Length: 177
Image (tube, rainbow, N blue to C red; front, top):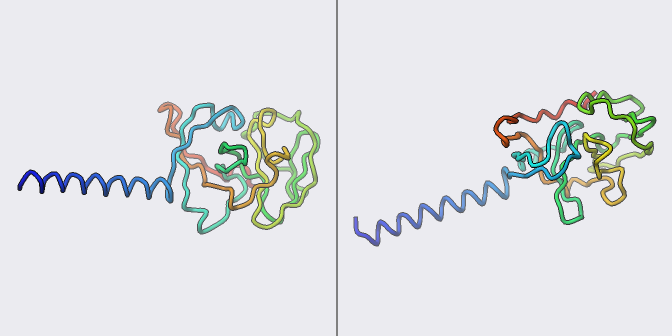
């Protein structure tokens, strides 16, 4: 094999690898870094996670899913889906009610001293999102975030891979009743 042919083979292989990497990154999965404590204790500041960008092309998020979305602040946020289109969400006495039923939220670690909210009915293709650390979370309760449309959701957080000692799958059904 001549030098120029071998060089061409290397260039072609690298180009194919870069093209595949870009396709995967833009359409299938993406790595995100958690910035802040709004999802503590489920996620911690600086955790790195893999976000599945393809599942929501076939279905909408479910209650309990942890999603990454465009916050309109120039940053991506990560929050938990608390309510979906057609649900009514209300917060009374630090407890969240979905459709009049108290939600079981074991990931909160006993936090119940946040403000009352609602009731608010969620329109179709919109979602009510909250952080797991309710006292330190800019989420759907804040008018700067509000209800989040399907178009703003980038994907479902599915795996924490960094730091290595904190590797875990993120199962979204924890908030579902």
